[in-house]
Image (cartoon, rainbow, N blue to C red; front, side):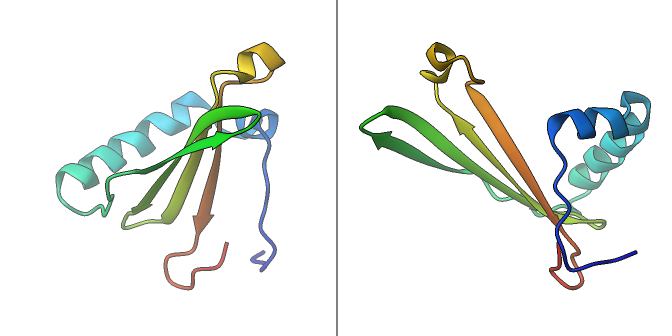
Length: 102
């Protein structure tokens, strides 16, 4: 059922629902499409974050394929290791390429 409400999956849910055996053919298709010029993938944008509490980076990576449209946002904060949290965190935002709906 389609809905206009975005679906949020945490890391545990993603690991539960995506199996490596299912991902390999999808990655193969993505690489074939990329090599055939069917993918629009601009160079990533990186913003340096320099605030009082930390220094880090935000990377934004959009892509359009024959099957999808999305954006991966990644943060990197080396000082997070001292905080006991991951140094790299990412969110992937997927939308319907025909309507732009999540």
